[in-house]
Image 1 (cartoon, rainbow, N blue to C red):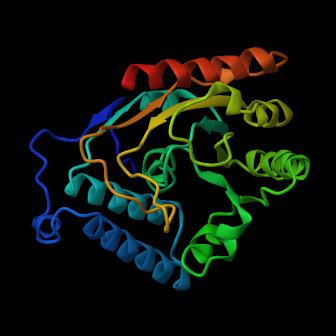
Image 2: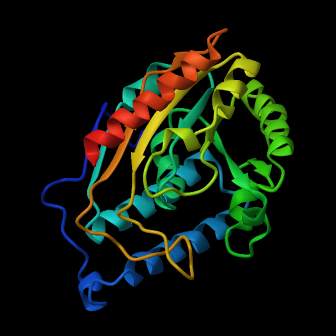
Length: 259
């Protein structure tokens, strides 16, 4: 299954807004209601032992289409960089909102079977826990940085050797802007250890903002376009610091261009 055929994708200019979004006064709630429906669809597939890579991509695409149906406008570039890179990758991205966690699978997994580095509390959650567990993620506690690094290096190498690419957000938590000093080099360390390339991804996803009470489900900033750019895969070899800087530069330059 290949959901995106070319190197780029942009939401069609004639994309219509769902009437039910208007019925709910263009609040956030129609999008989040559709999202909850997709979660339950995913959980049902898991219970039926039918939630494989293709199903994950399809339910991720459901979320993307729901975003477009409430006014979200995507601009995605560099998809061919995923296609031409051989073998599994460490995919390193900045982290702005919940949106990228839900949408990246429909772009990446049809090309590269993938998993995430996730927080332990997501695995315990009644709502998302079952879905997270089904993706064979790398689980960290976010309490002991050294211990988390060892887990990511050890478990990440296993996933990569097994043919899975790993999506990693070095900032650890969602950020309103990109600050290079907050972007650690764990991704390049993992790639060097496993003998694979890194692929940088620049994101601007503040269309889907963070909430005060429900952190992942804030108001929608409909005037803001959603940008996702995939860079070229980079061979780490012995140039760990240089490679990390290239990743930071790629994200920083794109983020500045979109600001």
